[in-house]
Amino acid sequence: MSKILVTGGTGFIGSHTCVELLSNGYEIVIVDNLSNSKEATVDRIEKITGKKVTFYNVDICDYDALSGVFRENDIEAVIHFAGLKAVGESVRKPLEYYTNNIYGTLILLRVMRENDCKKIVFSSSATVYGMNNKAPYTEDMPTSATNPYGYTKVMIEQILKDMCTADSDFSVVALRYFNPIGAHSSGLLGEDPNGIPNNLVPYIAQVASGKLKQLSVFGDDYDTSDGTGVRDYIHVMDLAEGHVCAIAYASEHKGFEPVNLGTGKGSSVLEVVSAYEKACGKPIPKKITERRAGDIATCYADATKAKEVFGWEAKSDILQMCVDSWNFTKLNPDGIQ
Ligand code: NAD
Ligand code: WQD
Image (cartoon, rainbow, N blue to C red; front, side, top):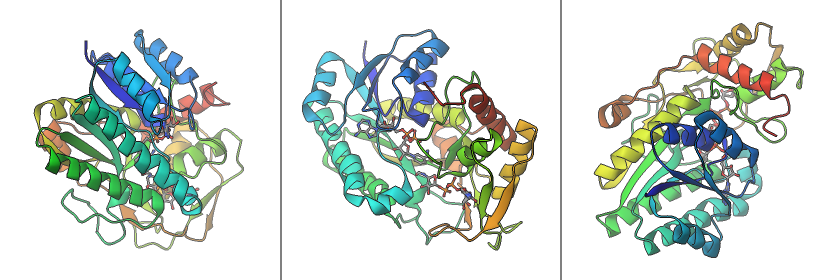
């Protein structure tokens, strides 16, 4: 039977998507170099689904190893999560980011072409809307970036578009995620960042668990309802479902299709803090600090296209996302071991 190759499948979004794929009857093969995840995640995916997963500890930049994976498995389509994703780190280490994300994708596309595999769902990001568009973002807006991480997403989208121009049989869905948070309801999978978290909800989770003292709220003088930044937070399981829709869509449509995966609704930093306090039943100590460089006031999706083309829309609200994040945090004080 043909299989879906999931690159970066032991990572945060990849692991939840693997659960959703297996629950929908797909067979999967995971390739991950474990640079930002643990092999124990594979057991957890198997535990939740009761299904077997084929895992390769392989770097997508390694042409020979990746070719071997395609030789050993009949790969019908790829979901491509593998990549480095920390914005600040990408500014300090541009070469590492361009090499890993872009060179890695080029190797993957070459191996796909050599094996006549012509369907790919790519993890893009709302970051491609840059600083010059105004929310709600629609897929036809011009893309741009402000940091090397963002440029890797803009450039990979361009590469994939060019692949579709060169080969009319090629099929690409570029999923532009907004702010994925939350965890699987079992508490077995969730977000497990290395070191001090950069993102809001993982940071709040560590304040709630007592690992960090207090949250810094980066600015309360934005032009928003309460002055703090507004983002479109989306439950990772809703996101995972969106990938199953995207794979089905890619099997029936050719060409390049960018699709937003967001709720279409923004929440402020203070609204997220208040939902998390409700979820964990204790106050989250916080102080207002300077704005963080590079942040914008408001970012949320126009989620119409995903509904039109996939029949998909996000279901969970911000409280549910915080409840599931807290459940994972409580059950895994030292992350996934
Ligand atoms: P993650 O770091 O948890 O998962 C990425 C996985 O890819 C990790 O398991 C890592 O070990 C693996 N990986 C990295 N480089 C690799 C390589 N060269 N070869 C093989 N494996 C490699 O991140 P995530 O949050 O699950 O994000 C998945 C994708 O979605 C990324 O491409 C990211 O840029 C994109 N994205 C994430 C967010 C977010 O806020 N989490 C938002 C928009 C887009
Ligand atoms: C959310 C809000 C902060 C931390 C980033 C990437 C983006 C995408 C998702 C991959 C903002 C505020 C945060 C804190 C705070 N990733 N905040 N205190 O910046 O929207 O998006 O992750 O593609 O590319 O840039 O997410 O969670 O960092 O911030 O006040 O300690 O929380 O200012 O308003 P962001 P975030």
